[in-house]
Image 1 (tube, helix red, strand yellow):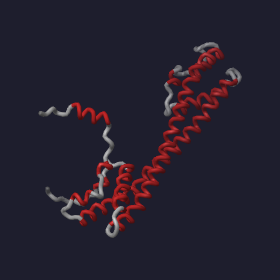
Image 2: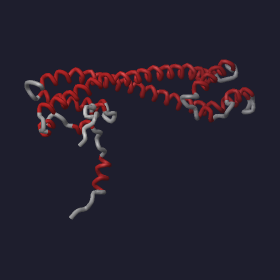
Image 3: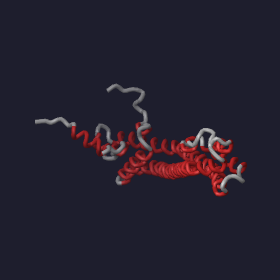
Image 4: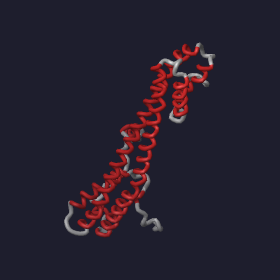
Length: 237
């Protein structure tokens, strides 16, 4: 093996190691160190513990903000589903109110046909709800009062949902960014432990490995892949 300037690269800084797996691995290392008495184990444990605590707190904070973001997006999807369904049902009352699909009133609601509403997305729904709100006011005497009220509600409800998406998305993005410093501290402490244990037991990999279970840093292997590996295993004998 050829030594290189990568000999001291920190293996725990890999992008393939998720914060959750790094935290799990660190906790396991901490428990193994704690089972030993004296130095260097006491000092190594003391350095690792606060770094792990900070990472654990941040993972929790990030998880909560991501859950909030997902919840908000689910709410937005539910809004869109309701919006599309309502507009399907609204076409006939509007057609009746204005005397046909060729009328100027009907065309102002459906300039591009019904599918403009039934295929509405988060990117187009603001334009559509603004239009409906304005038309509900403009044609308040022609439209059914309940339907006009529904159109006004769409406009205000989407503005609320949109503001919520922006706020929760920003919070999740900020927390994801803030994770890096806490994670870096854990990476440094784990690398320090790796080097120190190696110095404590030079030329004795077995003694070193009693402190590390590197499988904890890997993603769990899916059972279907295990079955596939067995199916293609070569037959011997």
